[in-house]
Amino acid sequence: MSEFKLDQRLAQDCYYLGESDISILLLSKNADYPWFILVPKTAHTELYQLEPELQQSLLAQINLISAFIDELYQPTKLNVAAIGNVVKQMHIHLVARYQDDPTWPGVVWGASANSSYSEDQIANVRQQVQDALVAHFELA
Image (cartoon, rainbow, N blue to C red):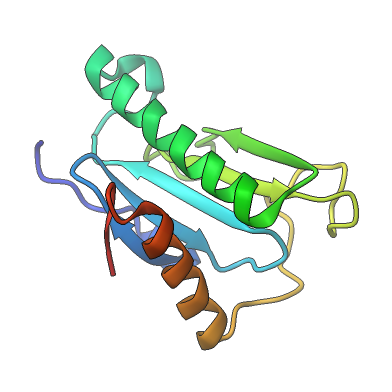
């Protein structure tokens, strides 16, 4: 893959969890929701622009992370979206939603965070990701 650099806004708004050969896995600093972000290592901005093999590999990772979120957090609904209106770099949001979360049933995009993670909570999420996804991601 060509030289890849994580968008500064994603780096600023998220905690780095780890990466695979095709993507980087992040955790949003907004602790109101279990909110993971998968960033494919590509200059393309749209999913349809990816080669079919990379699309399939990315979908497999999305499915893997979705199952991890569903099992660990047991959300009312799992939102998976590639929006990219503010940050043009391709990235996929995977957000566990609950009927009692701060913005239910509205969208989380642009909502102010009511809570943040402690260092212990971040370490706990990293360990959970490590335990569940170690075969797929080299974790921090």
